[in-house]
Length: 145
Image 1 (cartoon, one colour):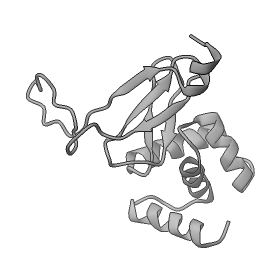
Image 2 (image 1 turned 30 degrees about the vertical axis):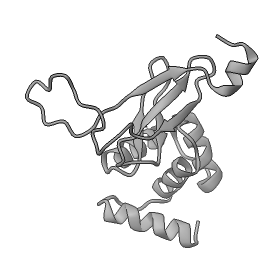
Image 3 (image 1 turned 90 degrees about the vertical axis):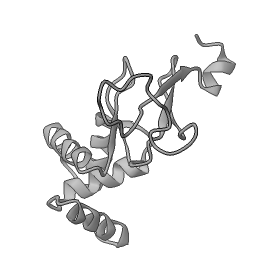
Image 4 (image 1 turned 45 degrees about the vertical axis):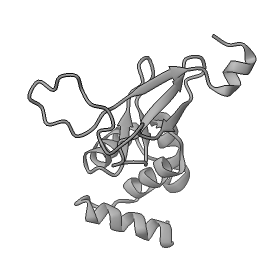
């Protein structure tokens, strides 16, 4: 686990105030190389990089990476939590009703938050989270519902 990518990732962990471990580096690189991965896929990717990693260690590290703002956790309704490396830009997601594939959707217009709440209840709103639902191109052409 050496090389420019791992060294850069280690630096990001340090800059975020996190202890650098082989597992954290492997998890962060796996999330960033993937596409809205669930915990099982992330654990598998990390194991390919560093060998055995317990599922508990994966959950704990993902919690720390999310809290540090290095990864983002999304939870589409009816699906397990997923993680992505695209953070800090207030983008949204589109999810296929049939196969569950998730894709990024850039903010509609303007700066974050790109939507304005009809009432803020006294909150100072910093971001909006929108999930669009539909059928992906593959499911649309296969006639899935």
